[in-house]
Length: 434
Image (cartoon, rainbow, N blue to C red; front, side, top):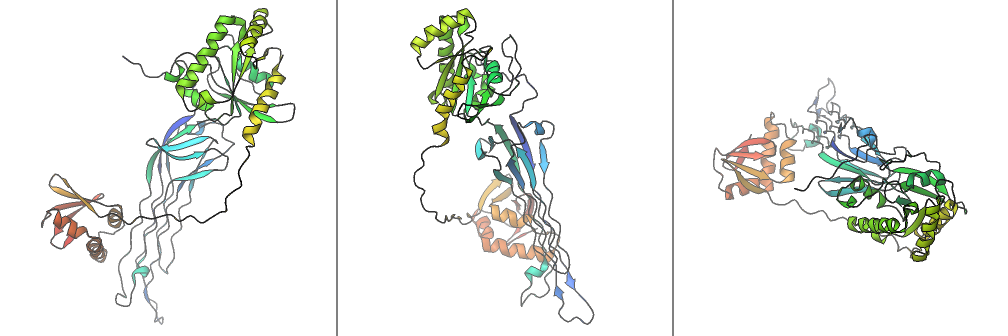
């Protein structure tokens, strides 16, 4: 029996979360009439309702992880205010902003909504409902006293997933206890946990290193990988994705374990990166033969350099070779930071095609008929079914939209139940009555 992938043990680092978000509903349109003594220009003056607040996700560099969503997973934006007499428009609901770290991928049901890979990037994940129109908007030369006010449109409800993929120039990879955390501490100001047992690092650590040419590099130390990491063994599955955005991988090899162990180390990591995919096996890579401060490590590093002449011998413990490693990483990363870009094409206006509303689809639900069409469902949801005038208007709109004809063609007869969205109606020949 295949076991489920293991989850990491560290409860402090949060890099994936599922949120339920609800945008604000639109405000109700007002039904009002102006009646003032000595003012002849009276009539309908109900204002429109305000728009519901959107839910916006913004990449903010001040947030290193998604830990702010550890306790709270449901967010609701404020609804728009109803319209008022005197053609006063209801106040719009303010947008609700959710801050996430740069590098966060926003998705819904395995479909990517946005990849916020730069600080300041934002995306509207749930749109607020539009406000209902007041009766002043329905006045015509032949209908001078309308008593129709639309209800506000319901805001979008969505379940979104946030996945953080750290943005770093260099990713440190290797088996547990290879010395990655010690190396990160030696070349940057980071202070990762360091101990002499496997899996000391339980979450990615970031540090900033400066090369001899003053170029700065963001370095990510990923928890140690073992054989089968791409299937969830150890802590690999949870953190391999943090390597996807790196420009360069530095494979830290424990040279003190001997030549055979070092070669197995290199082969294991190569296989895991290839099995995980996402282009990691094709990523530029440097080999760092660590622990040359130990005699056995120094001897092994010499042997490894014969097979891998571009490898660098280092000692993260005393700093030997670390500056050369940072300089080599900066040299490899530099061209990727400033690729030669072709001449930009002239900007042009992009027109988005808006398809026409599809014909209503009629299906059977037991003894009832279900009408499926987004705009028809929106009509019903925004209609005040307690108002006879509003219901009469809805019936006329249904007829123009082809709902009556589609129901008749589907075999709907007088007295049958018709479901549209969350509402049920009774079909009468030539109309759908509330």
